[in-house]
Length: 71
Image (tube, rainbow, N blue to C red; front, side, top):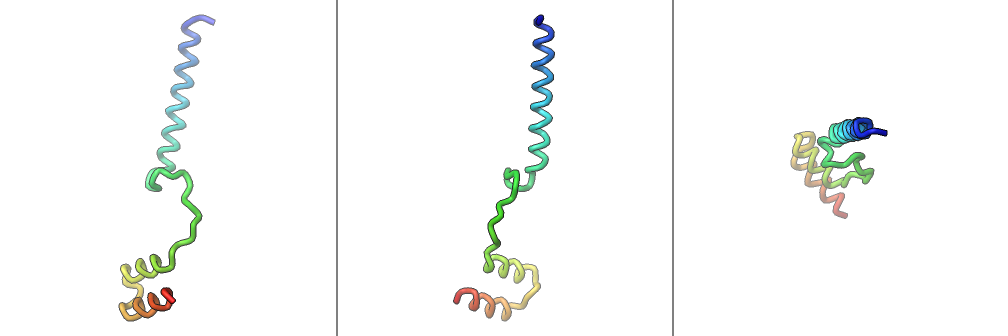
């Protein structure tokens, strides 16, 4: 095997590694660097806060539900 063939193989491996890195970077973008999102259940209080912030429930409903969740 001559030197040019060895350099060619190294270049192909480097290009494949960069392509793999690019695909992984695109897949994990926006997920905090995690390839797969954690499967932990959402916290009910956090969901309630989000619903209140989006205006889906009133302040009275929010306070009532929050008290129920704290029990």
